[in-house]
Amino acid sequence: QVQLVESGGGLVQPGGSLRLSCAASTSIFSLNPMLWYRQAPGKQREAVASITSGDRTNYADSVKGRFTISIDNAKNTMYLQMNTLKPEDTAVYYCKGSGWTRDYWGQGTQVTVSS
Image (cartoon, rainbow, N blue to C red; front, top):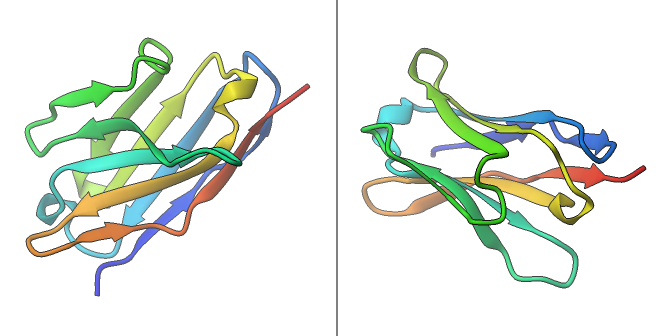
C-alpha cells in the first residue's frame, strides 16, 4: 500500500514563504505524474501544480511565478515551494501520485496566510 505524507504547512503572513513536502513510501519513480492540489473552505479541490517523471511541470495560473514544484528522487519526496503567499492561498494542500492502477492521496496539510 503506497502512502503519501505531507508536511510543512502552517501559519504565515502575506508575502511570506512555505515549503511543503510529500514523502512517498515507495519509489517516487512509480508515481507519474505527481500533483499538488488544494481545497479552500467551501470550494472545490483544485490542482495547483504537477510534475512528470520527465520533470515537465505545469502550474495553475493563480500560482505561476510564485510556486515551484520539484522532486528529490533520492528521498522519494516531492516539494512545493510557495513564495509571495496571499490570503487566497489559504487551503488544505494535498499531494497525489498516479500509480499503475490507481491514484494515491496524502492526508493534507493546512496552509493559512493571514496577518
